[in-house]
Amino acid sequence: MTLSTDALTTADTLWQHLIEHQPAIAAALAMQVRALPEDWSQRVLGVARPHAALELPPTGDVPMEIEPYDAADWENCPACGELDRLCRYHEGYTTGYEALNQPLTEAARVDPKVTVADALRRLTEAEEAAERGELAAAVERMTGRQG
Image (tube, rainbow, N blue to C red):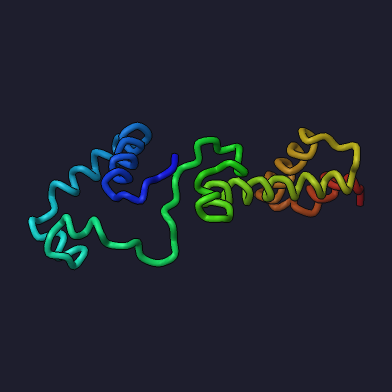
């Protein structure tokens, strides 16, 4: 989705996507807009006429972030491209992947023959043992060392 710089076109596009993906949020937003007082443009944006607000420039250097079409493909993500870095979705995905990948990598260093299923099972066992206060024994089992 390429957003137009025309505020009305952009608003229509965003509204259509909101209705399609988040209908409850669209309904709540519509109710809030209906409840605005007549002088909302003066109160909220500091302009006397609502149509004058259509010419207001964006604030700050933060571009609008859009939802990725293909969450798995960060290289072609419109939001990442718009920001020239990872968008919030892909940054979170990367952080989560790294949080999972690091223990798996460490397990493979300790035992190169370990499978992902074994490593995850060992991590689960270690977490459960830590909850029971048996962390030292769990570490010995996870690393394969016997004390």
